[in-house]
Image (cartoon, rainbow, N blue to C red; front, side, top):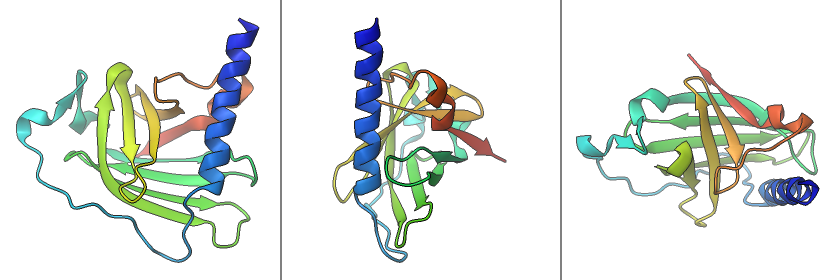
Length: 154
């Protein structure tokens, strides 16, 4: 059990080291992907109506080398997303991306950055929150778990 917890913490820590040191942009550059229309029969994924999770989610995620990452993630009902992150106390610490998201098994949302193919994962916790996870939907555990939640704004 201890090995499993230590492994999960190590994986989550590695994800955040990469996210803090990854693709940061200076200024207002946005990664975009050409988007096509989504047919109405694809608006349901893994038993979740895309319309029910559509909205803007905000929160401050933990970071390995700065006080946190103010994150805004907007999921649209046509399976597109917009992502913006501001790394607290970091000069030139603004990052933006947009593209298409997928909902996979266990209600895990996969956000793929079009320019690099890098993926981030968020699990639908309830109607008003997402939690950052690994690709399998494993949630962070322990005291820090509550800091990986993005809350839906009305």
